[in-house]
Structures are given as C-alpha cells and as structure tokens.
Image (cartoon, rainbow, N blue to C red; front, side):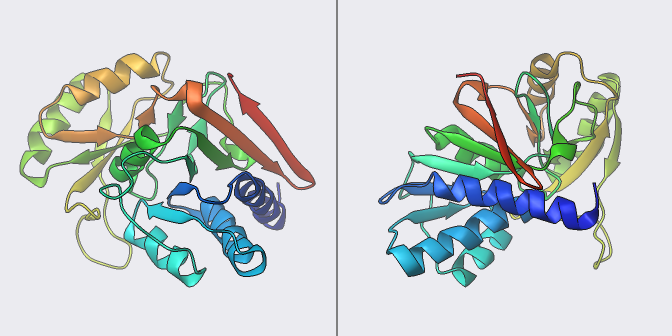
Length: 232
C-alpha cells in the first residue's frame, strides 16, 4: 500500500466511525492518526448539522485535537458511562484481540474502552494480522521499572524502556509513568498473557485488549471504502 493509499484508508475508516455517532452521545476519543480523521468529520458535523456530542479524550494530544475541531469535552468523572468510543489499534487478530499503545495512551484508552457501551476500532488494512506479534507496551510505575522488567523477562519478553524522540530520557505518559515495549514474538494466548502482566506489581496496564471483543466493531478503511468486522 502506498503512503497516499494508507492515508485515504485511514480517512475512510475515521469518517465511517464518525457517521455512526448520534446526536446527544458521550463519545470516547482515542489517540492516533486514524481517530483524528474521525474527529475531523465530527467537527464538520457539529458545524454543518448542529450535531451535539460530548467528547472524553484519552490523552492531552486527543484533547488538543478535539478542541481544534470544535468538539466539546468532558471527563470520565462527569460521564462514567459512554455511549460509544472511537479508537485505533496497532494490531487486530481474527478474534478481535488488540494490541494498542504506540501513542503511550493505553491506560486511559482502556479506561475509556471499559466505560463505553460500544467501541469502534478504526484501522487501515496493515493492522489486521493472523496472530498478534507486535511489541506489547506496558505502562509502568517509575519506582518499579527494574522489578517489572525482570518479571516481564521471565514471561519471555525483551522489555525496552521507550525513550523520547525530541527529549532526552524516557517517554513520560500523561499519567506520569514510563513505558516498557515488550517483544514476545507470536502471542498464541493473548488473554493469558494480559492476565500475567496484570499480576506484576508496578505494571499498571498493558496494551493487550482481550476483554472487550463482544462490544468491539472494527472498521477497516480501504482506499475505496470500508469493511466492518465484528463478533456480534
């Protein structure tokens, strides 16, 4: 797929998701380039159609972009139950298990995913895989990085502390934590691995999303349209 084709695929997925948002909804807003196309379209609907929604962003970046598009914002404190959430993914397998967290917003994204009645995952075709095999991001309490790394190694990972591109030192999440990117190779049992990581003290959340497949709809953008994948 060409770079231009990938952009068009992302736009088609984002726009399809935005079309599924209804007036009066509280909407979780994920972090990432495909979701930003959904925000762009939601902004157009607000301006042209008078669409009334409230967005709950998963990161500072998502909040900044949403304000740019004129989307009114709130929080999970004000909206602990969301009508719908729109988010992206790094990989999606046939069972709709996900790896997320390339944007380091996985902890808040999982909170929003849990709060939403319906979750729209917008991706381009390169994110659809037969078996999850991308590095799994793990958000870690800085105090516990060494111990968490040791425990992740015992699970078969090769944890790498994520470092900033335009800053020296580690990436610091919106929650003040660090990210360990953990290569496990092919992940045959993602649910079991997610549970094992969750049991490590100091590992606050990981990028495996395996518990929400019954409310997830994956919108796969293509250059000429979209295809929709769900288990319901």
